[in-house]
Image (tube, rainbow over all chains, first blue to last red):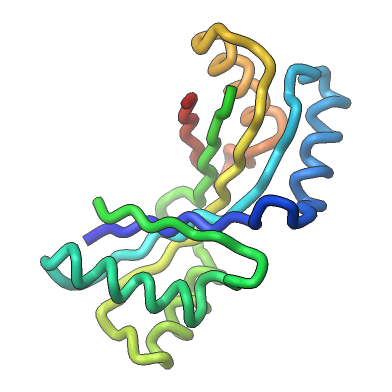
Amino acid sequence: MKVVVNVSLKEGVLDPQGKAVHHALGSLGFNEVKDVRIGKRIVLDIDGENKEEIKSRVKDMCEELLANTVIEDYFIEVE
Amino acid sequence: MKVVVNVSLKEGVLDPQGKAVHHALGSLGFNEVKDVRIGKRIVLDIDGENKEEIKSRVKDMCEELLANTVIEDYFIEVE
């Protein structure tokens, strides 16, 4: 089963990578862009059929490894 | 308007970051994970109302800056 974990910086946490991309887009003439935030999109291929059980296991993975919950939020999509 | 650009490595392109995370998950006992691929999730805040026009501009941003189309695929979600 395919599971997608989206990890992004919490609101208020500085995002230098996003800022650099924002600036570069401005230099290229894309002046309609007001803000850029960059996060991770982690795609997991997981053995199993039970969606609820898989989601709960992936939540454990996020808490233990995939996200730094001090500065990052995550949300899980089971497909 | 909020636009999300998902950038991921093309199939067949090695993903060492994903491989490292896969290995780390295995060490933590998450042996049901069969594969991990890691991409970027870029969230843009854009001035404008016309969805089609915005999507076309974001496509240009991807081709020019956000994605390396030699090794990466992208898809755009306008919300």
